[in-house]
Length: 601
Image (cartoon, rainbow, N blue to C red; front, top):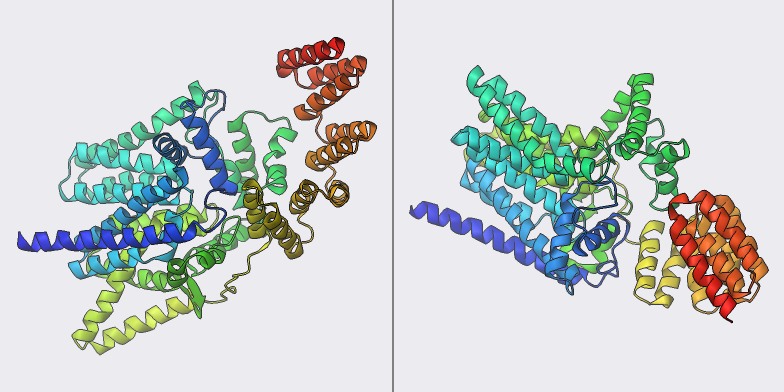
């Protein structure tokens, strides 16, 4: 009993250490302009959460889920509870979840190996830079890691005292994990197979069936919502196809590096340009392209899978859309726990030790659920593409195996088993050399995407001078980043330099004529210069790029109404209705309001 109390005290100490470190990091990172003005996926998740918190919890009118829904609903709940302090509140909640992850790492290490391994694993997770970083990001990684690790703890406890209800609960837990990160489904499929393999036939069928039913019960409400309200047969979300294609094509380096914004939109809208409208069909379109590549070049695909496998175990933290090392400038905690200097810390150390620990665990205790989880999750990630945030949900388990590897080496040293110790160190050294080979420089200056996102954040905060400097830095880093040029022109115009803004818009329109934003901005500048004919020409250019651009029609109708040319306004109305029949009533009501104002003058 006393030993149990002491063990629980250690678990609480691990939890407290992890929580303090994460709270300190939150207060440091609020100096970043992106803290309250998220970018890219974090911005998408935040906007989704705002719509949910506004009352549209079923997502009526939004179609099936594009991204796995658990995280947006989590954000939406936090938004309802803490509307004024949302950006702090959600990070504090994630810090709490992250601390619980560290406590669960302690429990798994202790349950699977011994108390020393558990303590080392808990402390290692508490001070692990990537875990700290993503606990402070508005991305699914933190919540997904908590849910999946909780599910793994449930499975380990059930395995000690098996029951059909226990396996049902474990299945539900992993089903919820799949609603945050569908990669977990690889393990959810493997568990029933393993149960059938290692248990008597009748018992295995019952347990495997209960686990599978639990997974289905967790996912079924989302699938029902996608069908009944979203209007399409999508299991969880329909971004799976495009993600499969991004990670499996002959131009992998280019597709995985596609920027958010115009480049991404151009890829996403490919099915629509071919007349494909249903979300599930769009996903199938990209999946078919991926399978075409795999069937057409199986040798090349196997080579690509090998490179992705190497990337998964490499020490570098590969950012998705933007590098993560840059954010060390805002935090001493992150600077101490995430760095590169000969090795990529911490993953360049965790990975080789974890591989060593997994090899040892096979010899000492045989296959385990955590080991199967690591293998399945790794396979799930490399089936798509590798990035730091997709590696996070498996990181605490890797820390447990790394802790076991360290403990085994220490135990051999203490027992003077020099041969075993030497062999173990040699294996770890080989793994470490591979995990830290060809390290990219630790970029603390930030690339074009970083400064573009900073510029957007400054602009949203109303700090035009800093936004100007950030956009200038972005285009200096990449002179062909036309979306950054566009925003630079917008800031210059907002600061009163219309000539410079217009010149930039014209250059962007010339380089990216299919994008509507530069044409619309040029029209707005012409209006400010009282050149309405010039504005109408630019509106027409915008409509040539996108004949279904509702704002262009609306603004043209309004302008024609202001100058009393109702005949042309009516002509624009008819064009708009022809291209946008679903907006017929709204457009006619708007035209009638404009007509009434014009005739009343």
